[in-house]
Length: 182
Image: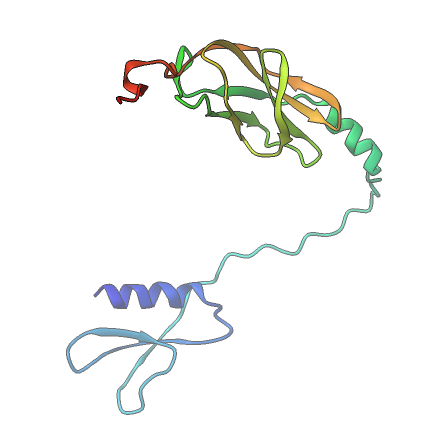
């Protein structure tokens, strides 16, 4: 039964002008839909309903002038992103024994081709600018840090998130669990 429904659906989707659809009952009592009727079996030809269609659009007579690449870049630079936020693992305390963790960026609309994201840690650029939405904070010391992200176009800051304060928790190098026993 499922096979016959699937076959009928496929036949209805295909173009009417390319094939006709026939229905017959096989020796096992199954209803079969096909575009090639068998020779010894009386197959019923099915009239398919007319498929909805629209006329081809007519080209408009008004000529629109496309903006130059320089104008497009200037427009893109002038438009700020609707959403630019940081998604940190835990906003208050981040447990990272090696001081490294990932900072995810939420941005809408998506990052433009000419823009890069720069991670800012304690007011200074951290790492190199990237077009990835996952930025790596590496080898941060224990304690409190401010984290932000800038959108850069070349060396120009286009937009920046508000700084978020985090506390990095690392294992102290003199912790009892790290001491070697003689």
